[in-house]
Amino acid sequence: MKIPKPLPPRIALSLVILFLLSYAAPLCLLARADASALSPATSLAAAITNSSTVLDFPNTITFSAHIATEKPVERVTLEYGVHGLACADVTAKAFPHVTEADTQDVSWTWDMHKSGALPTGASVWYRWRVADQTGAETVSDTYTVAWLDRVHTWQSISEGDITLHWYEGDADFAQTLLSSAVDSMSTLGQTTGVAGDFPSDLYIYASGSDLKDALLYEPGWIGGVAFPEYNIVLIGISTDQLEWGEHAEAHELTHLLVGQFTFSCTSVVPTWLNEGIAVYGQGGPEADEQEIFDSAVNADKLMPVRALNGGFSAEPGKADLSYSESYSLVAYLIKTYGKDKMLALFEELRGGSSPEDALQSIYGFGVQGFEDKWRASIGLASRISSAEELTPSPQPTTIPTYEPISAESLSATAPPSNAAQETETAPGATASSTVTSTQVSEPSTLASPTPDAAPLAEQPQTGSDIALPASISVGVVILVIAGFIYFVIQRRSN
Image (cartoon, rainbow, N blue to C red; front, top):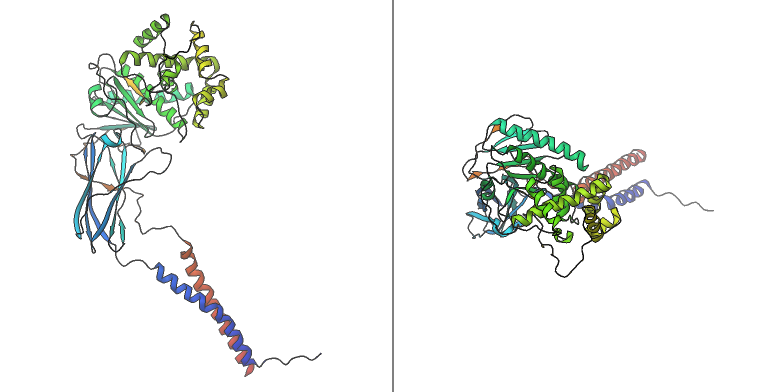
């Protein structure tokens, strides 16, 4: 067989170099294109300054900022929300009126009457997004502001995960309520089986009247209210109502426990269970509520369980019966079947089961069977269903507590409204049990950026970011190899 002659060294070298360059050239071009695409803009589209808020508690928040741009403004967006439990990250958007001027002041007002009220201490976040007519966009830092009234001088004292805020009464008054709240949380964990290992804030108003002034759309008889999605409790407690106040704390803290334990996007906890476990947690109904319940039992005038699934009546007498009857229902389940099954019931509800299906799954009977067994336990025959049964209110009760009998005269107001979404912990919490005093300034303070707020320039790494150094590296390696081969062949040819 005839063996072909080898190619001359110079021809072989040329072919090798051409082969390697066919790979290196496209990679270098890709690297150049990537570098051009990834080069940052030389300047921001706009300067956003003097970002501030004015609070008209409990009605509105007005957001303001000064905008300066090199090009005419196309759009200004206010993005805002509230920290707290939510099924998803929720960002509300508002679009203040703007002109094409390159310098202007913008503002927008959040009306709580339209969106639903926030509780005292809720933490509101917001930021500005400005786009000019070239499409360039600038985003401000993220700011937070505490939703607090400007009437009272709030003080704070903390122990463990609980922070108590108050403005009337001495340090002993606050410490007594705080110690009671800490003890109640520990006791509730033992009696209900739900651990309270999350930060919570208690705002103590000096009277029921002051509390009502801080709320929108709540029943006239309200004395305390819990907001589990924000871990916030509001109660009206005067300095001469410590005993009642301690019971109210236990009641509302139970709501926080249950709210945390059962939270999901699909859970529906009936009001009789929510309020019944809260009254159970506080040690049982008040004496006057128990008397109303006993009278209803004797007259066989108890409310159907299904009628207690939704909101309780704004009429104080009917609300009293709703609370005491709910307690009796929950106490029956715990005493008869144990707290482990009660926890299992909450878990079933958290998973999205209806009250009917959850009761059937855990106890082996539905709502009607449950009611029949409970009625038998208090000496009453099964209730006969009829078309005249009370039906539940379509709105859930906002987890309230009665104010004490010695408080102001009661008057009914509009039914509760669901609060706007999202909150974490209220500002002002301290890590120890020392008392701090904070004077809340007049409205019109500049908000400060949150510590973890990041500029828009900090973007997550993308595939192009990784391809750029890789493309350059491979191209350089190929060129080095080609040069080395050329050098070796030249030496041998010489």
